[in-house]
Length: 250
Length: 308
Image (tube, rainbow over all chains, first blue to last red; front, side, top):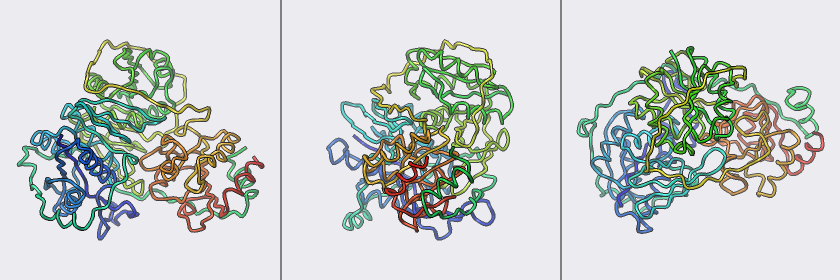
């Protein structure tokens, strides 16, 4: 079984981003970047499927500028056999990414596409579902458990109110949620070996895809700041203020 | 101009968040139609028809829609899309699962998780875990939108929409429902509660979460949790508040033993009043708390409860 794992280079999850002074974007100068946490979970899941003997090849793919190759090297250090870099300057809208990935799916014919449910920059949560629609594949989103057997992916999903299990015929798209697995760290020998693994450098033109955009970000603003709060000294004082000052409890 | 709201429901009843999506739809102007697709869902459909401002409820009542799988619903909605300029759903897991599939079938983008409508083609949405708000203009001929329902008041009842039954039956066999395990509780649902009592790793165990339960009972509150508490197994995932869990904005949010990581704040920082109880005076949660109590939660919780 071949698994395609789309990944994304994003701002590190611990960074508290600031809006740029021109209110046109978020200030990313000198900010630490990393692989999107949900993408790390996707890579880990693919590697575990290979360790279980269910997958034979793992291909990582990313859409981005040349710095994104760093994340492809990480994916290969973690276990991807090879990777594909689709060179396209950001920002690229989710539908455009899905169309580029659709072209890769057509080339690679994976049995399973596993990707993060959302990237922590745009927080869109769209690409996986769009890709599934474009490829006419079933989708198992927000997966916390994945079992593959007999040409099917059985996906246990986290949903509002609890959990749901769906069975998908392969090929299928699965998007990862937080509790699917805990990703491993790349070991130094694997990081060194990953430098020799191939990165296929493609462009949208080579894939026969025209990248278009249909949205414009007009402004980016800070959310309104909360008024500073106060410290209270006892449960008594807290309840008293909630009742008589804030009036949020009877 | 008209818009279609995809109802959130379980066949028997309409989920309260649908009324918030309708409020967002009202800001667009034009007729509002609601699609209720399910199995034996007439009750949910009637509840939708009773919401103020709804002109028509489209009912697709058939066995194939029982579990509202996106592979089945997306083609159904695509078939209806020609009549609408906007299609909206709540940004809960059902809407998030479904709407991008609809957008791709229509070859348009999607605007996810809007917190405000600036105009018929311009919307405000949080990015970077809510640390920034982007105002986005869409040039698509039809706008596919998911709505952060905590940012919109619920539309009251008072409507009397017409009902229209749809005959379309979509079959597919690539995705099959296997099972579902939903937690049932007497408590209000997190997304709609006006008071939330939320616990973090500081609670230390699932048994200790009971301390929160009795306080929640006294306040008529919903229970929430941080990712750490869910990962540790103290409570189920459906209670997780945060960037990738539930987004809530109640009148009162009491954070107990929660440190206040960026990802947790993303899910609750728009609450009207925030209380933080934590023994660590440097916990980031205190930066967003209106009332902060640095204390041992095991001492404070019983004291508070006695006063309620």
